Image (cartoon, rainbow, N blue to C red):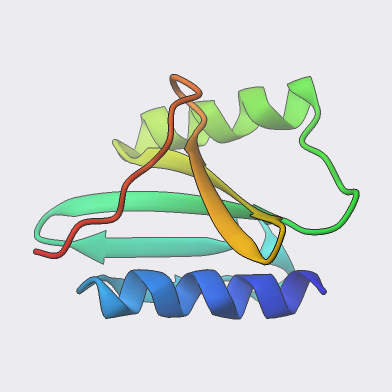
Length: 96
């Protein structure tokens, strides 16, 4: 289920002009998305899996070191919801 979500999110970013790399075994992050000098790190969570406080802190540190936005992708009622971990707001994909 998780891998399927990763591919779905990967395709969403690609359709919006990002170059996307999927990390093997999801360590330290599931997807790295690059476009026009902007980088987005994506952690995908499917089903009942959740993001603990320690893991969230690790991801935010990684984003800070890389100068990237960190996004959590979850599936909600057949839709993919993208949330920015930094501020908890909805992350909007927009075409270049």
